[in-house]
Length: 640
Image (cartoon, rainbow, N blue to C red; front, side, top):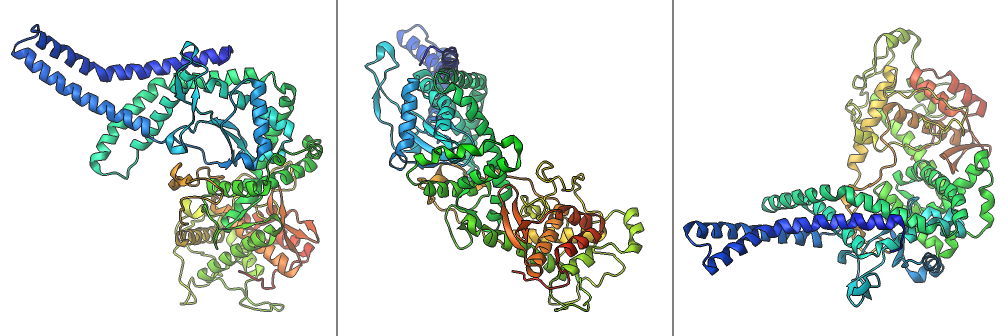
């Protein structure tokens, strides 16, 4: 460990953590020491008599119980498996140039090189200790170079694993990646110090013991013992929490100070790329990947999509001008032997973490290429939503009056949706005087019976639940998929009225509630994905290292409201009508996800017109928009 101020502060805090461990050991040995004194006094003839005999028996029994309990707690802390981040491991033969870059960086920083490299589907990088026996093969025996005079002593050592955010490899250039990784790799120096390493092992063991004690799948007898172990572990964690936090701050400060000598000027510029990559990655996941995951497809080139998304952003936003010019330099993903295979593994892991998808491919969980995204995801999504909307209308007993140009009086048409959601003129006063109730059937004067066809089961009118809203689309395009919180910089023509949880008209409220109930029913009927023991990304038993029942670990967006849900379905129906009657095509926008292409150009202005129909029952703006684009709402559309 170097002479940096942060390193010295980290070592002082590590010693404080170890002193807490020593005090805990002293408390556990105190009854045994008292018992030894009493027994020695009785043996030497100094502490004799009935009272001393009774004290010896009681103290010895207490000492035995305390030693047994302390031994069990120490065993649990030592053997409990610490948490490990889900990553895609990168072998050295799969990325020799990347390993060479990291080792050269460690040599320039005069710190130990990381023991391995792994990728995470996130915009972050860190060092992770995986020396616990449960995380892999035992570490090799190395001579302790940091022990000073005790240098002849041997111990088990292993440098931490370097975890790199996969979007960095595709968006950053080689020089930028080296500059960004310099402070991270510099952290291996303080991490190798025996005191800091021992303090970290102790804290990780306590944390793992708390997680082990919290396991509810045990018999009552073990639960009582685990409750005691958990109480002791939490007490020790609270005692050393501040010292551990300050220790990590000292390690980070020491690493940052040491890294100033390497590519400092490049790092200042590269930090801008870190923020840009994070923005593009978040946009890609929420707007593009999430609709595909919900359709049972996972994009297999998410990291390559980040480059396309950020390039599109640089084209639209003047603040990002100049970033795309960097693309002529060598990208960091060239350091990988097979970047496509690594990208696919990281994309599958991202789907598992952010959506909770299966770890293996199957009929209902297949990869999709970006070229197939419009047909495999966008088209299917719109037609699935439109079919759900018409099923709910059938259950409500809504029928469209056949017009003179209707080809199929009973076919699914956009006019049927428009007519049902249009507020009758004589119902305006009642709508303003009374608030709609999502659990009450449509009470409009021209409403038909709720169940005209006995073969169609009626859907119970129940209020929306979080589960019902969890399957809604939260990442649709602002103009074509009713994103109700658009970016004003990217879409100045989008509607920016304040969001409301409940639709305003009785018909809208009833239809939205029924859609929510239908989604809840579909979600409940969907079979749960099997949980295999390993994933095709090369991870050895990832399900054994992190909690599979907690998936998704990082949900992307909260559930949508009933009004947003209905707006999604109406927009999907409009897009289906545009595709089937006006020759429109489904498309992919790298920043906004599914989009509608009319004549090869992106259709704009749909979102505020759909909201006018859903919120106010006014179809005139939407009908005018349809007429301008040549979309015929009275013609039937094809559903899935």
